[in-house]
Image 1: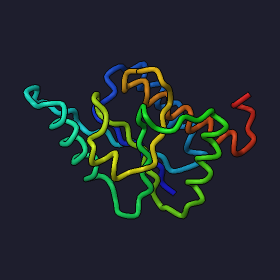
Image 2 (image 1 turned 135 degrees about the vertical axis):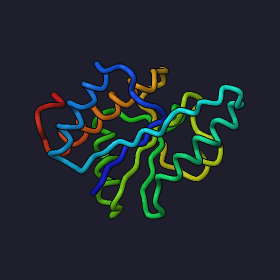
Image 3 (image 1 turned 30 degrees about the vertical axis):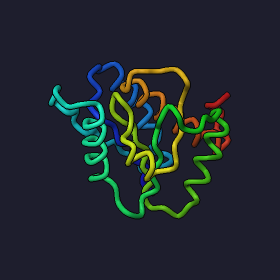
Image 4 (image 1 turned 120 degrees about the vertical axis):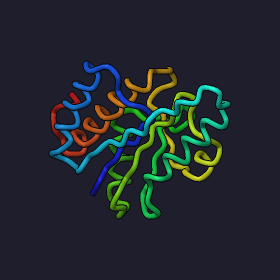
Length: 155
């Protein structure tokens, strides 16, 4: 089973990237994990709606029809770490070959994307830089697997 994290833009701080790599390496023991970084849009004259629509098109180019898609959105369902591990287990046994988590751009997702993909989770009611959300999510993904395997990391 493949777990994929799609993000808009690259991680620009090598310290954050280094921490992300620590958790990516830990995830190897639990799943086939990869990240896809979609380049940021460079046209500054684009309206917010146009930018979200274009980012949505770029995201969908990386999706397959049989993917299970989970959007990371501030209006999504909130979970504790243990609740997230149960959600993770539920999607792992869904039979999907690829589970794709998606972090939107700086303005979030287009209406089209939000309406099309109903699985939406929120990591917090607080706002964080997108680079940190990647780190937080990958750590929580690792934590979720350790909870499912009764590994002491969560304690």
